[in-house]
Length: 130
Image 1 (spheres, rainbow, N blue to C red):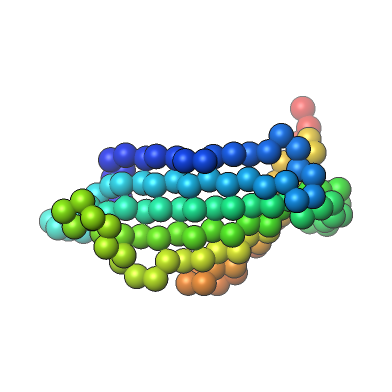
Image 2: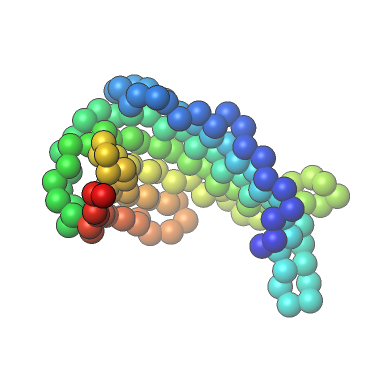
């Protein structure tokens, strides 16, 4: 996909991750999808809302970390643009995301469960402090 324009609304990351603190973002990407000699104008809209869910100790291959757990819900819709009007290409994907962040390290674990695909888990396998 070739991106023609990107807009982001309501992007809000909290300064602190106290339990219940929320963040959200909405990103819209307008572009052109090329398949052989045919192309179509398309739009992808990602709407994410997150909430800090408290502290948790997490063990991953890189070690054990005291983390802040964030739970998020994402709706991801893909549409084709017909005379400027979005026409859904199918049912939107809903994704449940749980991320664990450690102070001074960053993301140490992420679990994403999608309504359209399998669950994906990403873990930190190593890091180096400089």
